[in-house]
Amino acid sequence: MRRLRTLVVTDKPAQVRRLISECTVLGCPCSLNWASSQKGLLPLNFGEGQIRPQPLTRLLLERAELIVILPPSRDGEKISQLRHRLKACVVSGQYSDSLPCQLGLEAGSARQFQLPLPEAWMIATALQPLLQRKLITQIEIQTKRQAENLKLTPEQVSQRLRSQLALFMPGAVIHVKNTQLLPGDPYVEAQLNLLLNQTIKAGKLCALLQDPDHSVLLPAEKPLDHRQAASQETRILIDQIESGQNDKQWHLRLISDPLQACQIAAAARQIAVAARLTLKNS
Image 1 (tube, helix red, strand yellow):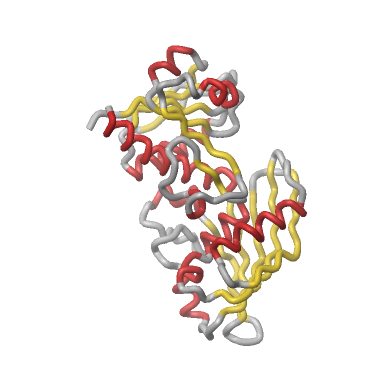
Image 2 (image 1 turned 90 degrees about the vertical axis):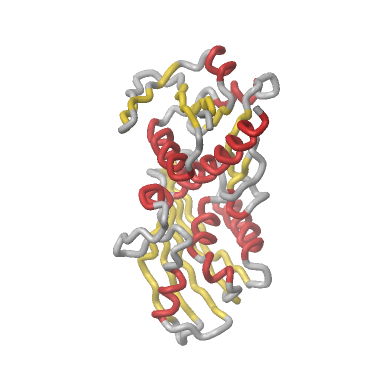
């Protein structure tokens, strides 16, 4: 199978490195170029060679079969305005109230994907084994998020978090008690009080939360995801599991850095979808 000519547009080298790691794991048949208008960026070295940032030019846009825009990028808006004139499939991501596919991480539209709030992504991912078994009757939530550019108010986050989690917990009572937004390095934390519809002992609960099919790391930092290195970029740390008055009540504390990690994971999956569609039609 030939390799798809893919252009990644971002001003942050870490985004490129993360994306390549995810795409390697997924087996995406892509040959990547990297474009950025940011001056002073250094090349990225990999075992297979080196990727150098290039200024965004008309030639790069015309040669690309697939264009991936990852924030932060000062060129993203320019490409979005030109996207209808381009032959390439354009993949870009944004946070949104609507979730067209589970967590924004599954196969959906190859042209545009939408992501849940970082808080919703972290909670729904960590609790996925419990959600699949419909064990949660009630959940009480307190969250804290640090980010460089905070555009939402705590009230908006609380409202959206409640509506997004309701999609994953139909019938459960959801209380969002406190939402903090602070400037700083990307970081998300959540305190959860769970009421389950059946008694579960500590050992069984821990075993459920360590389900190997989802990317959660417990305090021992043991990778539980078969994707190994890629799971390090989407890890969620559960550093507290405490019982309440009985074995139906549990308190969890979650920590993660999903502000960019979930964008990367979603983008890689959309690249895989777009690559298959483009190669099939070429």
